[in-house]
Length: 66
Ligand SMILES: [Zn+2]
Image: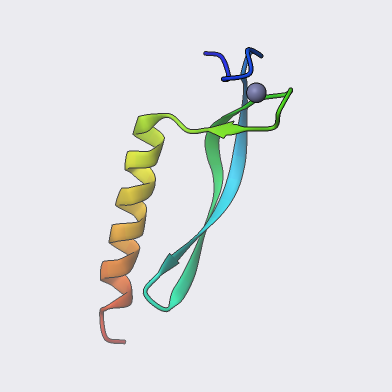
């Protein structure tokens, strides 16, 4: 896979913050592809689907009463 700038992407992992309801969820070790030339990040579709799943599951848990 190549970046828009033409450089070959390198596999790496990243850490992202997502806002869920009134909380912030941090997901670490997300598989990503990074461009060593322009520093752009790319995620594969299945990774994005998985993140959506984690966020929706976290949202359900937050709505539960303690
Ligand atoms: Zn690039």
